Image (tube, rainbow, N blue to C red; front, side, top):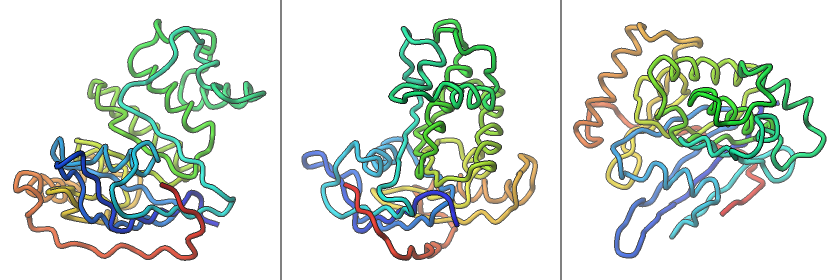
Length: 256
């Protein structure tokens, strides 16, 4: 059985006063797929992610989640690690959980932080704090993992390391993932589909068919990167044709 939750958005829109941020968003993501949202700043990527998470109500439209075990568990990871500085690494990971210390230790080992359980966030590097935040999100084994520029503040080497770590962890325990990023290469390396947002909507829907793991020097990825960059520079009106999403079946849960 496929892991993760299916996601369906129908005619989703969002306005703040007279300012329209999102208009008529129709999107289907089958369970277990990794989808990235790219686009210029201010185009509504993070707003759409917050709507999916239930942190922001849509002005119009509806969101449906499909899960095999009742209401899907949805977790969100932000660009800021949002760790509590007065709690140890272990207690940050187990926040809101009871009797999960052993699971938390295994998760910290998986993200390369074995032996740092009793440290406080203040003594960790930015990349290490993001590893803790990732462990905190994944210990819940969410059906839907939402990532809002989680590696955007990291240096290039740490960012590449975190990308590889996320890919490895998801290969062990697949989940549905929606990532907001400004890094086109990151989107191409990690995703099953890349959505280019422009003009309050989704301008392009590009499936990535290369098998994993993918390599930055792959000429096919380089070609896709140039096309997506063209789309960004042209405001979403580049050469890529829209691709019809796969349908969801037996949607059982409604959120938002």
